[in-house]
Image 1 (spheres, protein in one colour):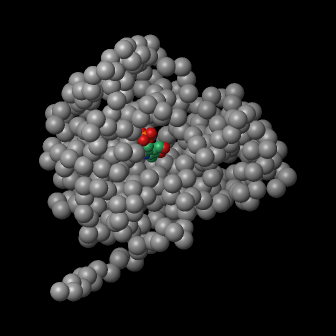
Image 2 (image 1 turned 60 degrees about the horizontal axis):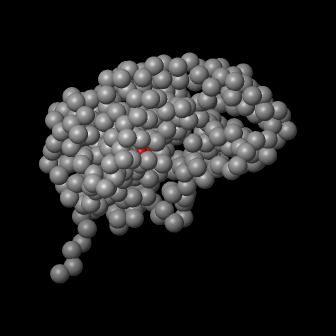
Length: 365
Ligand SMILES: Cc1ncc(COP(=O)(O)O)c(C=O)c1O
C-alpha cells in the first residue's frame, strides 16, 4: 500500500524555513575551524583554549594512562557529572565529545520533522542527514536573536545552540525553554555554556522540561579536543535510548578521568574565573573592532568567539592568511555568506597585533 505523506501545515509568515534543504547544493556542513589552520598561522579560527593544563586535570589524566588494560568504567564520571548539574546519574550519558551526542540522536530518533535553527554548528544537521533524515532549517536573521514562534509547531525534533556558534549570541533561557513540549525532543547544544560566567541561561539543571536534551563539551575550555570527551543530559528513558545505539566503550579511561576532574568544584570555580577573564578579553576585542572602519560585530557576543561582517570577506580572509592569521570562514554556516568571519577571542596582546593587521589589510581591499 502506498502511504501518502500528510501535507504539512503552512509555515507562519515570520518563519524563514528552508524546507528539506539539499545539503549537496549548499554549504560544506563538515568543514570545521581546524580546516583553516596551517603551520605558522596565528589561530583565530578554532575555539579551543590552549592555556597549559592545570595540575588538578593533568594528574588524573596522566594517572589514567597506567590503567589502560581495563575496559573503561563510566560510572564514576556519570556520578560526578550528575552531581555537577544537580541530577541523578541515570540522566547523564558520557560521549566521545559533544559531536558524538549528535550522531547518537540521529541514530536513535525517527523524527517526522527535524528542524535545526541556524546559523549554528553544522554537525547536528550533518549527523541527521547522514542518518537519512530530512532536515528543515529555521534561519535567524542578523543579529540572530531567537523568537520561539519561528519554530514550526509540528517539529518533533528541534536543535539549537546556546550560546550559539558562530554568532556568539546567548539566548535567554526562557526563550529556549519555550520550545520544549510533549512529543518533541529539544536539543540544546551548550558546548560553550561554560564560557559565560555563572551560566545564567543554561538549561542543564532543568528536569521539568519535556524532551529536553542538553549537550555539553569538555574539549573547549579545557583544551581536550584531541581526547574527545563530553556528555548529554536528558531524562533517564531518553538516555537509555541513546545509550542503546552507542558503540561499546565509546569514552576512553583517560577521557572519563578528565570528565570526573572537570566536574569537580575546583574545575567549576576555575571555569568561572576563566569565563570572567574571557569577558574582559572579548570586550577588548569588541572595542578595537568597533573603532576599525569596515568591520561590524554581530549581536552582543557572549562566548569565546565572535562574528564580524566585512566587505570582500573571501579576499580579506586570504590576505589575513598571507599576513599570518587564520580566521574562520562564515560561508559554510547556513544563513551566512563569505562576508561573515568568526574570530576567536585571544589574549589582549594577540588581539592588538591582529587588529592592527586587520585595519591595514582592510585599507587595501
Ligand atoms: C557548538 C559546538 N558544539 C559541539 C562541538 C563539538 O565539540 P566536541 O569537541 O566536544 O565534540 C563544537 C565543536 O566545534 C561546537 O562548536
